[in-house]
Image (cartoon, rainbow, N blue to C red; front, side):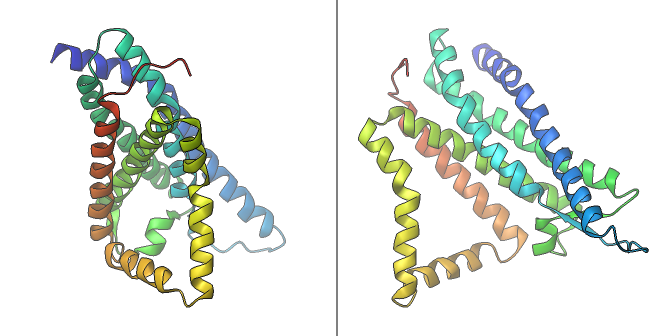
Length: 236
């Protein structure tokens, strides 16, 4: 237990700068949205008060993905070099991912509330789910960022464990998938329609979406466990 707490403390200290940078990204997203609005509306003598849609999830989500990608392997090497077991490292990473995801979700909502004192703004999630409410919006964004951080860690570990040919295969997989879907659309779109139906089923409301994203994150954690059990320490 002591080693787990010490590992958690080390990991929190390791990514605290990343959390601050992520919060700056959220503020920058608001600033850019405000600037674009005023630049496109500057010729109007009367500026109507409209609620601006700010792409928090897009910018912060991309950062959360790279957040998981960038730090996981470096922290893995440091902890193993200091005698921490793989199991302890993996267990310690679960609460740290939750802390980072919660920080991004809470800061996003706080930024919306503060900005709303002088100009209303809302997120893409509120655009998709108008009746989501503040409480469940917090849960929705938390599960979203938690999934992306976990996905980043899984990708980083998959590359770390792979040989050069497999790394190329992983890198080209999105392009191959895009080409397959493109050909499928030309031939009638059977695969695309099934994907669309599945997404409609799992993302039809914020409750289903949050549960689905949490399930994906748990699955990713299971895959990380399978990959990390015998992951060697490598210089690359």
